Image (tube, rainbow, N blue to C red; front, side, top):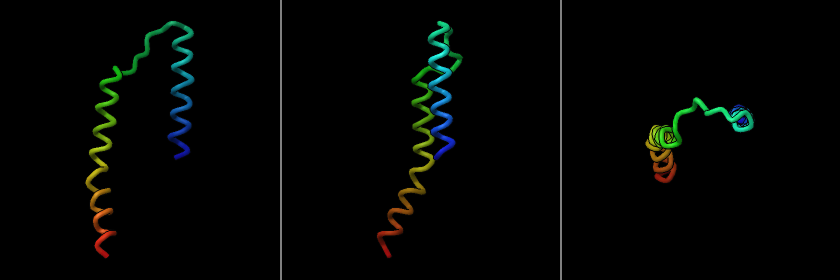
Length: 58
């Protein structure tokens, strides 16, 4: 979890620097990032549901 927070903090800092320098970010558009988030959610959804259902049966 610590690595994710560090990554987020560095990303925000770089974004601020890009804004101050008035440089367009090379990052993909927000809609693409939302799609990636959906893919990650979908990837973890089935194992999560299996674990959740499996723990309720016992």
